[in-house]
Image 1: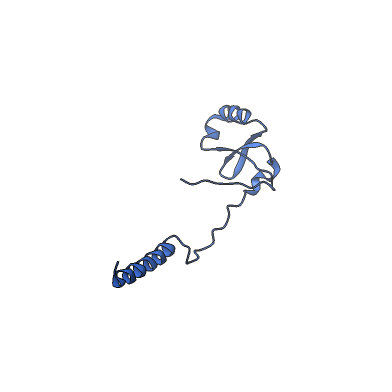
Image 2: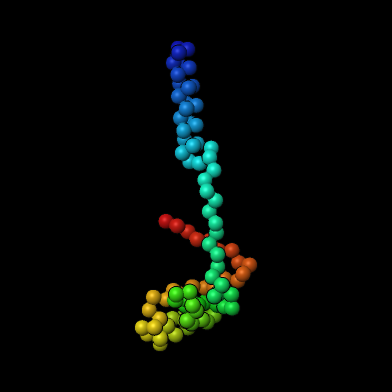
Length: 98
């Protein structure tokens, strides 16, 4: 390999590596993402399964099946509610996307 080819190859590698690092965020810092906060409505139900509708707890129980049965008894009033486990205040949550 001749010297001019070696020089151009080295320049190309440096340029591409820098461009790649900028593209994946190694060279720059983006805005800090704030963690999602636990709704205060869940404080009284830590460790239980709850049905939330419009930020209000409409049913709760240690067993998720009991909450589902209660929601079925409510009928139309429970439509659109979300069933979730209320974590302990010290528990960390992981949310996956994609």
